[in-house]
Length: 96
Image: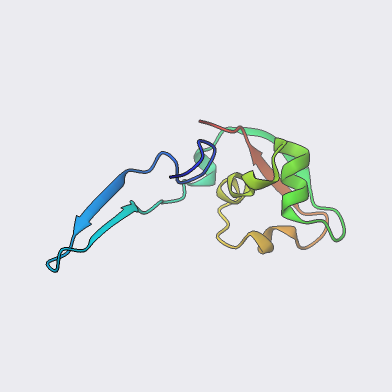
């Protein structure tokens, strides 16, 4: 259902059957870890006009892993991490 590097990959898959016979399959809810509990790789500084996917590509090698930086910085809104310019972002060690 999800790629191995997805934030949803390790979540339990559940199937529910409704009284009318319909079946729904879904992943359990993901609770973001506390950033303070994550092992850090480095700090990165946000440049003028820089986007989170570019920072993620530069630091983790894959722009789709932006959610790891969100988790490490306790951010629910990825856009909030790129302002103001010069802000330090915590970059976590990717854990599988």
